[in-house]
Image (cartoon, rainbow, N blue to C red; front, side, top):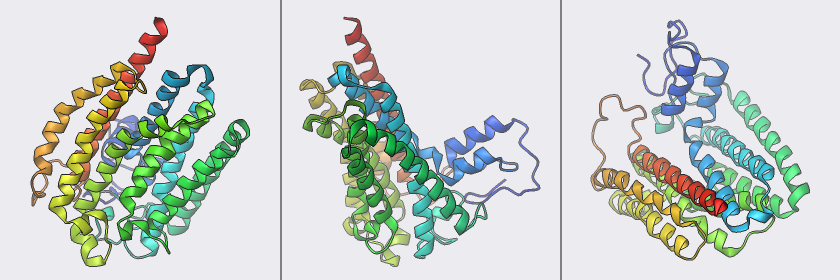
Length: 348
């Protein structure tokens, strides 16, 4: 069996269940399945595609907000293009983060990034140059999309894209290294909220009222909760290294409480936005996610276990995985409810 964070032995027999199964395993766990790595599986691992559903959900939330609030001005093709753009931006961000964390010495064989999944360079999947080239290619593709969106919607698209790019680079790269100074979590809140949801809405409609910026907050809190969980998991490594993430600054116990509050706040905020008409009433379907919240609440109320449960795929991450499964479900339910709401309204 392949250990977490390591590539499978190249001599291992190819998985008899076939290539699509290997893609599903890589997407579900962020780790390589048994057998040789095909090109698609390698890319899935390199760009950390397992977490891309968070960004895809942001794109759907933006599109459905546009459909509900400004259907007459919404352009579905520009929405689709902008959604592809934020997905590529997320991929590029993951590639650049791995490159910069390696350059500044944060990532090594004993750091969680190389333990819960294969590190692109440390595992031998690619070289530093190969990682940089891939990041450049993905960024250039995104620039092509930005050019089209700017032609269609004007220079504000550049502001959204440039803001996201600069924050993504500054998250790990010198001289700012926002993550190292307790600013990584606010950065994720801004990127997954006003920049991703707001920017995609703007690309779709051509304007962005303040209520849409406010409407981006509930989902941004869920995404920030995932990062909070990840940084809680990394306290034993980050604190001695001088990386002062928000959980390091606050301490584990208070950071766990704050993460619980972020996840819980999602539901009343959606209710408020339904009450003022920014979300359709069927968006309240997301309240079903409270069932999952209840299940993750108890683990967040206790310290991390000493050992992972049997078959747990991404140890030493624990709180990050728990927050992610809640975010994935709550976000999917919000999208489903919003879609039902706009469809029902369109038939009336």
